Length: 183
Image (cartoon, rainbow, N blue to C red):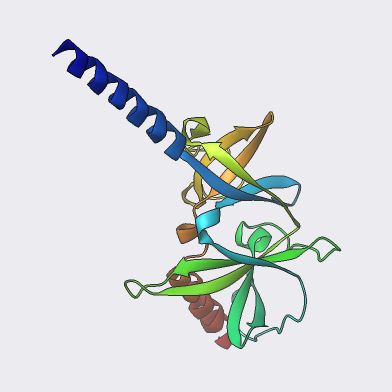
């Protein structure tokens, strides 16, 4: 019986070790206005250079326009503007990160591009290194923040994609903009 208990404890130890390894998530890090942000790699479809953007009239200020991505129309958001800051200037390293966002319809997704200053790297961040979003002091809305991690002595803001790129909230901004301009 003792041998069975020892074997069970060894098996349990291996399960705990494998669970600890699973608790590490991958994030794409990028720069925006001198700050480092990240998005879960599971939401990222691809990264493209900033080019061929078509402006669309009567859109919220945070929507830069649309791009043609292999025949599909993809809206492109200026994250800096979404955070209440000046629009991101287009420079040599400016990229559009294509993200898959859930829609209001259960189980459906929409691709949306976000403009970033530059893409940095894909990092594996242990969940134990992620702190909850601060209730005050952040330069963006607290509900936009999934957490904050410390990587190489610097803070990285982990964005909550479902809140930042909420299609319902963005469409409401468009309705408000359209109503205000129509007055």
